[in-house]
Figure 1 (cartoon, rainbow, N blue to C red):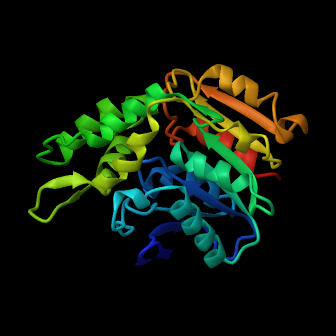
Figure 2 (cartoon, one colour):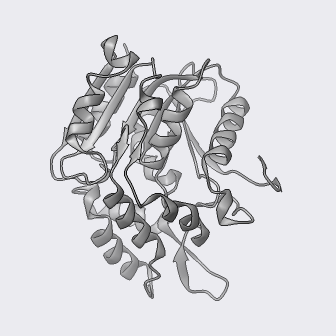
Length: 280
């Protein structure tokens, strides 16, 4: 990919038949990576869909950018547009969790968007600043994690809003959330500088109705019952307001026992997304 200061590598995972007529792009949250979608991707691939889950710049196997200031919408949008072009398809279905939902909303609101259907996982047209403060604090934490078991225990606590997961799913999250650093110690699998721009957003709620009002494609909004990022009143207004809502193209599902954000690993969550994307 070409960024503000030269080329960098963008990694992605790929499931299902390469020549599939329907391609789903799954984009993760601010500190996560494409492996979060492995369970959803397997279910969709079993239906014959191709599923591509990138690691956003600075996360997972993708290269870090030269400065924290570059981790912002223009770079993310450019990267995703280039990835869609590489896939060689005119349209994609988009599943976006948190930051991935924000990028998807921006792209879906543009003229001639390549997004056919949009899934917003616990993200919407108004983002609570209290939730952003909580996430920013998490990004700045540097716990001493001596091994993968300690990392899993820590993640079970800080990611408890994901909801009830199996032991295997928690191990999957832990295994892909950390990597060995230069001195052999475990570190988070993202560039710490991603917190730089993110921390600038936390003084006020982020209001995105100007994007939502322009979206015309079918949308599924997923919300955790206890979400501190997507308020229920915001969700209710999204069901009434904007071009997509006026055309009856907006659906919603709320998940008990979850906060920000539903993991999309639970069978019932996967089924709702699959039914929205797959039309027999």
